[in-house]
Image (cartoon, rainbow, N blue to C red; front, side, top):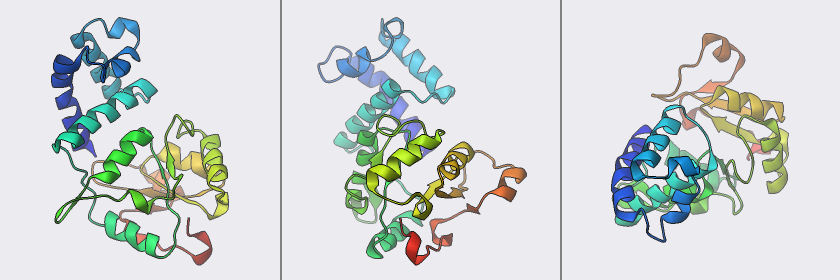
Length: 220
């Protein structure tokens, strides 16, 4: 959701100016390396650098979650989804498909996103579509490019790896899931990184969740 990333960091200067020494914000500030939190401008520059390089690191993800929380709390943000997502996920839930999410964004941020989904009549809370313990990030599961992370998740949920389908837009994550003996699909969306012809030839690629047909014994 690129526009959410833009909005999140548009809010950062205001948060740094208004909350630099506030008890609510200082735990997030102080998690950054000391040399990058001497001044608000230094922290902002570091955040922009990490984001530009797409660095996945816990203290940045936690700050993202805080900024999202502030935006959602104020009503400034809501979560847009591709049109096929909500209907298909709800259908799977009705069919007793077990659902979980694994993201580089923190569990805290994931739940905020699902709590405030854009709907036709305001926002909708979709958190109950996920299995109770079905929220995973790089802190409680590990790196998304590491096959052991996927093994850890299916063991935690009590699922069989071969009956678990992982959806991703990232080739390296796809490969890690397959290495862990999960099934995987690459979801190719507008704005995603270009998928090479070689990768397309060896992977199962879809452009919409409605393109996915689940077998009765693989509804996870």
